Length: 279
Image (tube, rainbow, N blue to C red; front, top):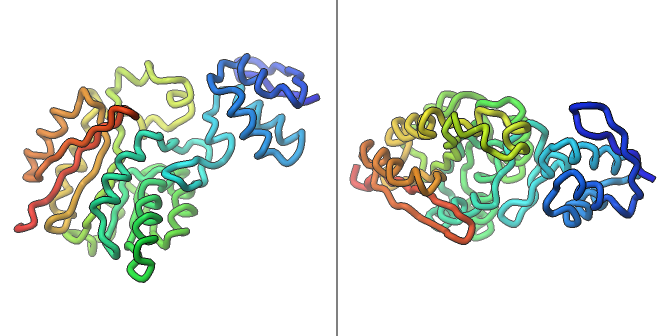
């Protein structure tokens, strides 16, 4: 038998047979209970560890934070508690970036979280020409994210800085960044309460909250992007379909060319801003 610690509202102990972890997850409201159960069972090295993992999931923590890793763009990345979980739809942004990244390019991943976006781009592009590996830099304002990203980004030879947007990035990169990934928060402040509890309660608010209209952090990135991008360099960020028109205008207002890419299958909208090559 496995003893599970219940939800944090009260200390409740539930006893579940080892072969019915899926039932415990299903009772807790997990939609993909059987699939999650298989992952938790595979991750646990003992019944006691399994009990700990399941108790954390039953308490509402995101599955990826419970497992300690996330599957993203064909690779497994480490993921710590209190670190934003990369979304499947964001793989579309990575695909758009890979298509425009040359071997040896300077890549900057802002609001990097666990570092999965930049590391995924590096993994794919370096596989094409290992002799000219991309020069990856990443930054995040959240200390737990920086610690997590450093472990993931180290695997592809990158460097991670701690600070607000461009503030910690070496000035020597100004005007030389060819690929700028900016997975900025874009949820309007008054919509945070409507998010699923996994995100709302277990991911840092700063990684979700985009201000009154959801575009405040985006504006700050776009305002500074032209001075960091190399001529012909590209800025990539994800946005909701409803916000895409205004986001495109913001990019144009800063003198960047803008393209909107859309994948209906995963409900992903990506804005690609390009600094004109002649500048």
